[in-house]
Image 1: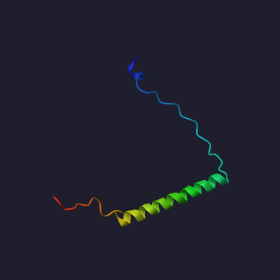
Image 2: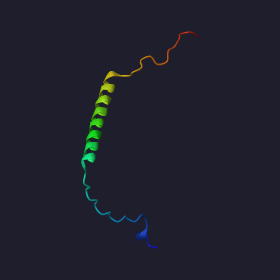
Image 3: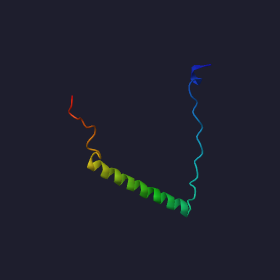
Image 4: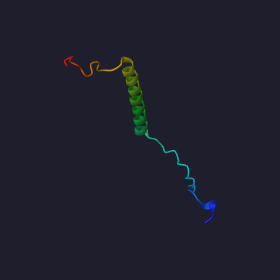
Length: 64
């Protein structure tokens, strides 16, 4: 065994996948997912502006 053969073998290149045809259902589904993602991003932006939802945390009674 020579030193040139050691290590991982490179995998053979996989053939390129053909772009599959999208029908109306797939197009509608992808559009719906994009809209949901945009709504989620907007909700995250609004939530980060307002600060924490709970302001109290653990209350200390002051007694010793």
